[in-house]
Structure formats: structure tokens, C-alpha cells
Length: 84
Length: 84
Image: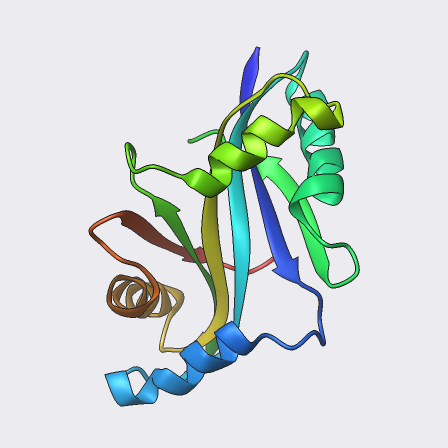
């Protein structure tokens, strides 16, 4: 069966995030105040063919570690993408 | 109070996603089979100072529409980033 899975890739704590910093700096000029700690990340949605949802998530976690993230500077986590 | 918020930006249905397509093509050579419909997206984590969580999410949705996404080709949605 196919299970929808979402892999979130975020920069590790302490790693510089120029994209997030640039967005945060631009906000006040656009009228948005009170926004802090902006961090940019990536997400990947996919369908995984597996025996169970937990097997699909395990496969996604392996894939995230090997292919979708750089473990030196990024954290990756897999979650179910099923709605509702 | 500060509320943690996550904004997810994904390509609209039908918009070409070369990044996702390239990843999907690379998977079988790396030993991952049964993965389909790979779509790449972005995510932004931030803390928003607001009166309530719903006000924070509303602010994040406005910000996502105006600054973090291109509404012509992307969908943006805001969700609570609180853990547990």
C-alpha cells in the first residue's frame, strides 16, 4: 500500500541561516512586527509503498538521512502526510 | 506571548517540480524503490508575538501569502509549531 510521508529538513541549532535572517530583517519594513527566530527549512512530500505506515516512515527516515539532508548541518525527520 | 509557528510552502498541483523529479529519478540507483510523487517544498519556523495562538496563526498566514510564497505557483499554510 502507498503511504503519504513528509520529510522535514531543518538546520541544526547554531548553524547560520542567512535566508531566515534576511527574511526576518525584511519584515518590519513590510509592516510585520513581533516575528523572531525565523529559520528556513525544506520539506519533501512523497508516497511510499510499504507494508505498514511505520515501515514507510522508517524507509523515509533512511532516505532523508542518506539523500535529502546533510547530517553535518541539518536535522531530518519523517512524519505521516495523511490528512485528517 | 510568543507562539511558535511553522509555515509550509508547497508547489501547487500541476506545477512542474524539477527538484522533486530529480530526487525521484535518483532513488532506484541508491536502493530505494517504491517511492513516488516526490515533491519538494519549503518550510519556515518562527516565533510570533500575539495575543493568542489563533492571532499568531492569522499573522503567519498573511506573512506567508505576502512574503514567503508566490501565490501564483505555491500554496502556503500556517500551523502551530508547539511540541507535544
